[in-house]
Length: 306
Image (cartoon, rainbow, N blue to C red; front, side, top):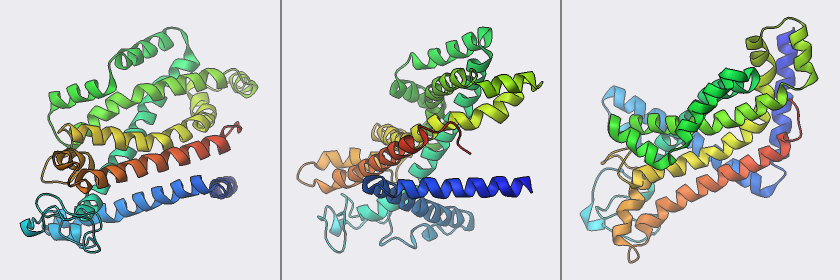
């Protein structure tokens, strides 16, 4: 019975947060963009995976206007039109189809990197802030060690060490990303541990690990969730920079950042080649920022997110 009541309360809370988000036109716009982006990425990503397992890669572009890999030299560098709404690249491939085909990789890496950052950073930051002393000193020393290096250079070094590719880029970005979340979680743990209900939990005999698990994670999410939502766009931008530099997903697989890099060779005469995928990156980043700001305004004044 208690689980049913808790689920009902959580469901009502989620609906209330969503309703308040949709009241602001800019936040509603950002939310719709993110829903479309991740919904499409799930559908397209599943088709690509199924096609790979079945040995039928054509399933990956069954919903796309054109085959994103098939060159048509007679159609090279065509400007945007009804036939090709984002134009074509130097090999005559439809840019819109390639942008849509590349979306699942950007969506997946944004979720995995942010999720990995929250998991690793939360574990280190919460224990550091709550335990203090030597635990905090060691955890923060480790965090500062990673923060001492510029994020882009560190990611490039890590990926160059392991090898180029999508998985290696993901690992490199998780390693780069968790320290900022460790800082946030540590600050939240220090704030929360001074509250009266934490003192009551200690007096009741709960262990520190149980207190962190039961009473610190959810309140900390008040600060972390808006930041994490905004960070989804930052991850897409960062991964696009890696792809721009020739890291991450390798050709002939389309990737937004590498498409921008290739298109710069033809800029400004054939401006759409680099501008169109760059515009998509910008729209996703702005949408995530708008939703993150909206969540911050809603959750900022609440002590618990349940």
